[in-house]
Image (cartoon, rainbow over all chains, first blue to last red; front, side, top):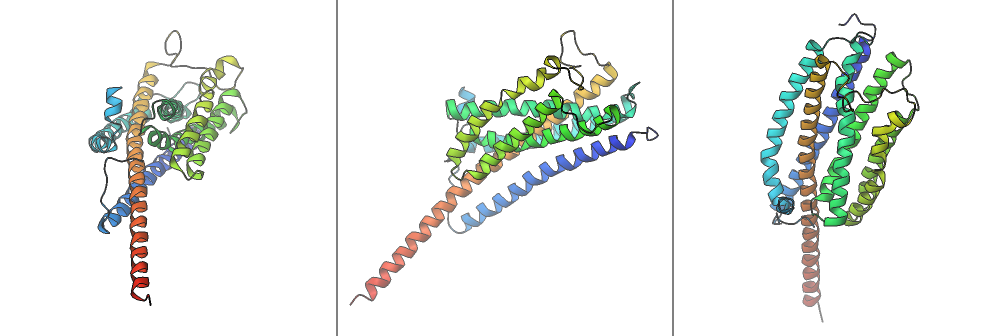
Length: 55
Length: 260
């Protein structure tokens, strides 16, 4: 498999896929953590969450 | 329609997401594991392309997802403009960034496949150019959401832009039939059945399911984030209002205390 002259392109494609997919997952998870933390901070300050509203 | 309205309530959606996200993530991990094993160790090398054909197992599912996500986004845009579904704009915003990600993956892997097979990283043929336009449309939708401060106005602007951009989807699909392109014509979804050998088709199908489950997982998580972001915005406004009232109260008490 690795003796193929174009094997480097295959590895590069899978590495690119890993970077893009991991980037999407990390971005969404980091956003979730940040939002949850900010909401908890506001609730701690006395604001009550209104779960039914979406503006 | 009744189901749609039932899950219009963000609290119901959050409860549903709590169950569906782990389930979908598990299905993603399982199908991705099986798909990668089949793509790397079971599928044979192509008699002409050699090992390079293994890029297909990423490139083709990414290309399908790039178009599928746009169809999802178009449905959400209709939901915003026609039915005014409260979650439609959250879904549209969540889908745009994911669509850009999968389209970038399609373009990047296509380029890495094109260089050894065509001798060029990029050619301005109809299929490649229309997919690049799709990527730019996704970025445009993301930019609209980020630049318009009022969420309601941003939702309407992004929905209209999405509906206009939907014309590009049939152009991408039929570009290889309408114009003389370097990109090969359809080999899976075509009249007369797939033109690809079953030993390569099955790994491709499994990888397509894996990518679809991955999208569903990330999509649900991103919609959940949008619901939390709106809740945070609402609570921040309430907190700012309460602070303002407190300051006004303190100020009038001070004035009353020092009034001659």
